[in-house]
Image 1 (spheres, one colour):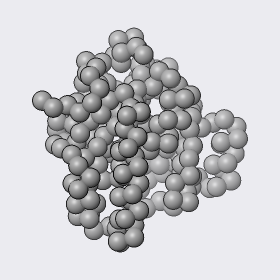
Image 2 (cartoon, rainbow, N blue to C red):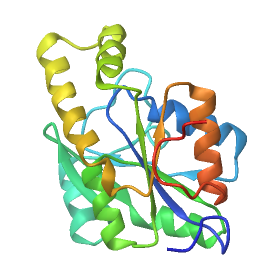
Image 3 (tube, rainbow, N blue to C red):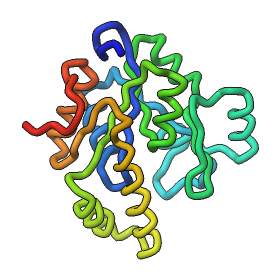
Length: 198
């Protein structure tokens, strides 16, 4: 695989368990690299309070989503907790054609699908320092009831087991350090697989 930053724009897929802070890390990168384009996923789930169509997600109906999938308009798609999610292909290709690096925030299943469709994609896994730390973060949110918390922890355990599929692993023990590491990966200067120990 060619190094990012060396020969034009690249497609980066960032994954990590819920509560690992991947969204915060990606936002930190976008704050320093406004040239990077963040893919907006399509979903059939209802918008949560404060979420905006076209900014957080593209909110579509189930028939709309199925039509997009059947036309081949999605780079990847999956069903998660009874809702459909997918990455629209055309905006990603348009941004790459404009010379912009692209970041997609996806789960492990989506990342594997993208890697299959685009072998040159660079996969980055963001993980917490430990699963105990993740549990405390999720519980501290106060948004999960005990059954939901248990379900998310099981899902997190399964996702972390698959981190070996990724090209890079970023341990989010401090946001600024994790942002710096992801910036190095985007620039093609971070080539060592595994957590950054410096």
